[in-house]
Length: 192
Image 1 (tube, rainbow, N blue to C red):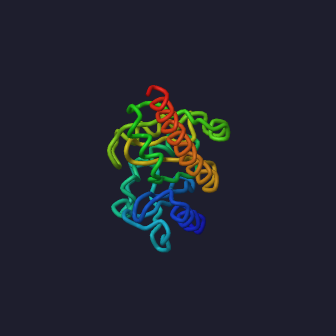
Image 2: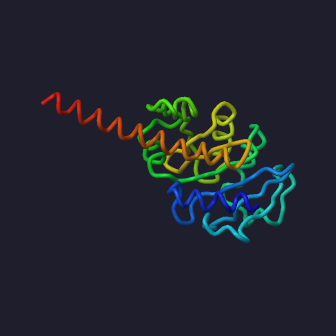
Image 3: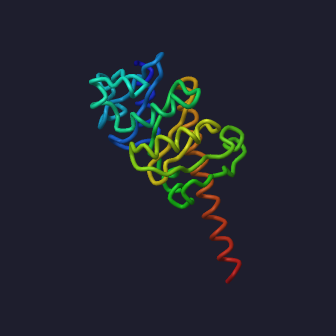
């Protein structure tokens, strides 16, 4: 639990989430520790609950778990993830809105390309079954996905690894956005 509290603060401090948005979870056997709905990630003390991964065995704490609890469940059920961090970073959200739904963002810089290869953009409303299925499917072969217009889901074998991936997605999207904007400006200047 302390690990989720620590990384919740880090996510806010580096600007990967704003205010009450985002959520964090960690798999513990057939259950997960997950932040509660509406909780601020930099104030998670007392705001993390344990719920079953299998929704066939609902828990009374499901009602206060994050609204994305079913997305986390689907990812845990269909991938090797042991930790999931969900952020709403600016460049990742912006690029996802410029991208086709169910498209791919291919990083421009070598480090991001090496770590992430490519970042799928998936569709589905907040906490929806569509988002849960699309995110889990894409995360079988990728380290992160961006829900179009919503934010990044990063998976890892540890909370630290998921944080590195979440941070890497925002870096990759920022670099790509800036490079694409510079290229567009360069082409405009050359056409004149």
